[in-house]
Length: 479
Image (cartoon, rainbow, N blue to C red; front, side):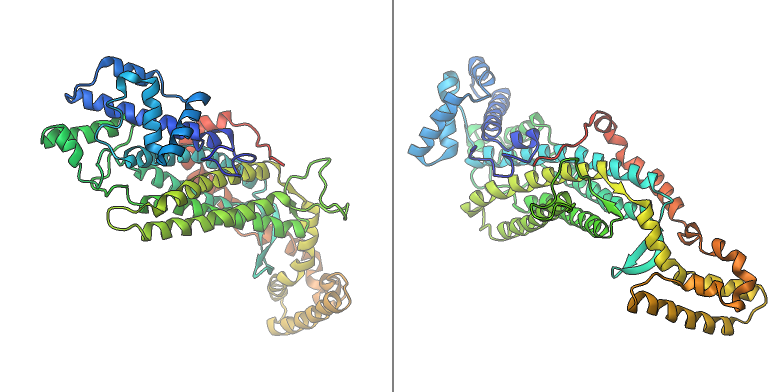
């Protein structure tokens, strides 16, 4: 398996994310860093031949033979960067003497990581926009379908299926905002030297501080970063990793909440994740329809949330200008975070595109609870017809307890309305009961909230991702 990949990438992650964190991409990016350093140094007056630049440009991608040479060299030298300096020189001999000129290992390793952070976010953000779009379509479709709300997972006032989905979407929008901020805040390490003082480059340019500053700026520009961090040690601060993985971890919390909600609703048989025609839920219980997609999402979301703690610990123990105990950790942590987030987005898109709603089940559950919720409306109707509020309250209280006893002690259906229909006291409002028990009158402004939320918040946030939304394919889930 590719030494810079993880078990996650070999099976579940997208090809583009797996490729980003492959050895080929890493070492090819190192070569681009050496090329652009040489270009900038040449522009600023160092004697570097055109042929050296041409040979470097022609050999940015490593073939299997070069990967093998580099691996053998690393075994001998026990230094990955110098192994690749040597390997690059074998295919660009005119440049062999100037590759890595003035630089330290972190020039390639750290700048490459910042490139990967940026490109990884560029992969994740459009996928997140797609997920938001899919859930928004779901919310609009079911904007006015009444459903029983739950607080403490106990029956509460009604909401709508679509309004509940907007709670998920709002958190996803915050994740989109946070990841965009992290992406846009990223800077470049640039050319800083062994301890961040740029001493080696000052020597190369004979004490010309202006040229050293110009070199740092030019290399940063060549890689499309808006700025370079003004000061660094040997590495860029590992707090930057935390700044990126923090929003990703927060996204993991969102996914866990959404998937858990769907799992709870699946247990109630109100909403289910996609379930394929030949899918098997259990090897023993043939009837089962386990929510395996949401369970997978919860499992990986916890992993993504836990990774963030690792970045904080690594950032906190970097000694002075640098220490190497971050390296092996980060080679696992950063790819794992991006690969996990990538898989979660594919899984969530698959779920959002195939959610199944069972209106009849929802209606039945409402009918079991709504009579109790409607009692205040019934009392008000009696008062309007000339009745006494306190007397009506007492009669409702007695009948409600009797109906509750049937439900809880006898396992029967809620018969409160039947009891009201059989009680002469309530005869003045019998013909109003259907209207008083109409579920749509109990959802407040839920449908209008969905409309306003999608119009004022979702659509503006997704405007920049319209090309991605037009070209996206339906998500297929790996086994």
